[in-house]
Length: 213
Image (cartoon, rainbow, N blue to C red; front, top):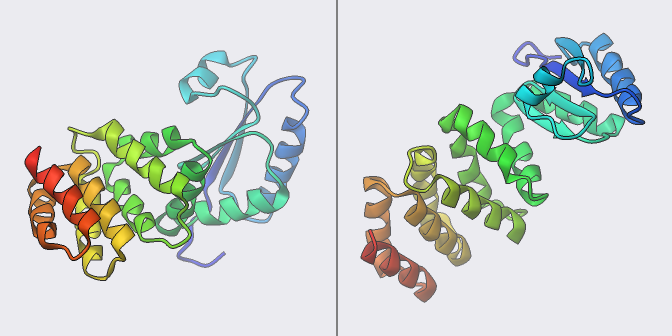
């Protein structure tokens, strides 16, 4: 593994009788032997229920790779991919957020942002990602609604505003809506500038946001 990468610590939560847990453990042990994991800890939720509860485990196998959390069986390729992404948090968080939002698990995204609000900036990059489906965009909006009135998503404002000059009309409309949910002086100034946007939908969103600011 390159010197600038740091293998993540892995934590696997299992239960006796779980059909997928032994296989996950073997795969993780292989990754540990290859140096793709720094450490591997296995927790039996039956004998350590308080630990499993504190981790928020609802089903097994449950896996933490650094800051990333997963539930259910994973293929060898998926485990390897996420272990490698977890070793580079700056790059790994974006595909993780993408996958969690696409699959309707925005609670994972919200939990990581609560731990470190700077991580919200990663969501801004997804807004102009051409691969971002409607589910991803709706997920971003739901995250912002959850944090509306707080400072948890302020880190999104600057990168969203920076993306406006080259963004497509659909993206500008989404950015305007998201800025209205983020709030703050930066967002209000950007929304005011969008009152003269060439796209009528963007102008309408900006007008509504400025009116209710």
